Image (cartoon, rainbow, N blue to C red):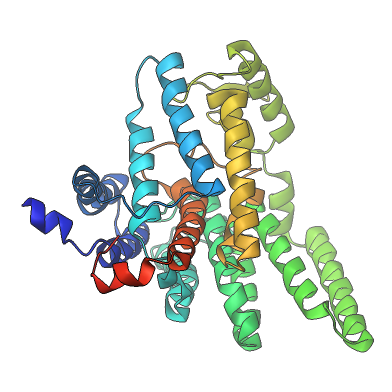
Length: 398
């Protein structure tokens, strides 16, 4: 590609649409390889060309961008020290984060149509998958769907994404007082997560969503309205207890033999200690632990323990600072990605692997919200610059 073509390339428009295509690929395409190819061809390669051409001048100094730079720099340094080489997965993640930060328009997710499409599209994907399994004789109502047909296959991470997309949609529904759609969205999410996917991590996220909804309706409400909300909450709690006692699905959620979280966390804690507290075991290590005598687990099922085990206390500290800073920035700016990131971090305390890998759901749960928050902050800082209008008039795109 000629140099002038790269310099005049409409990066913001291109990468905003490329991100939407990348998100859709998880539902539409059948395999990890297909999604990876979408990322390499339509995301990574154009980003590399723009970076080589010097199209990173849109970066702005802020505490969040400084923490992100420090975290990825430290991951690079510690990877060289512990593993002796730079992980290609770290490069993939770094390019994705840079592209989202520099060239994706954060305002594109302000679209009501896009937010609704993300949530309802994912719900319909699960329902359509179940319908296919049912008519082919592979599904019986009440049975847990462990694997979905396309790239977005895992039931647990799919449930987390449903909750997060609901968290992204929630401020819009509350602001527009779309209460019918709000009730339908919550009931649909509970149906898909609790009855079909049967994900306990997803249900934890839904309980947080319910608490937020009740809090929003009860805030500054009259005493009678608060009393009605309290009665509704008590009734829902009673219904939940009844389901636990009488529903086979609820009993399965509580007694399923894949829990053992405390034993699992203890084993990974001891493994982290044996590798060294500061640097951890390295992100390229392939390790597993055995719990309950014969149950092999391949990752810590906790995002914070994951960063500690693989990257050490140093990496964990930098990630905690970055995530907390992103939450503070998004809260102050009333950014809807605040709820998305908070819900993701809460649910990932109980499940999920390393977010430093090839393109997967953890990119969407961890890096996407953090970088969208950073991108919105970047755009806001640039608009406050006195020379911003001059730059716009000259047609320079970042």
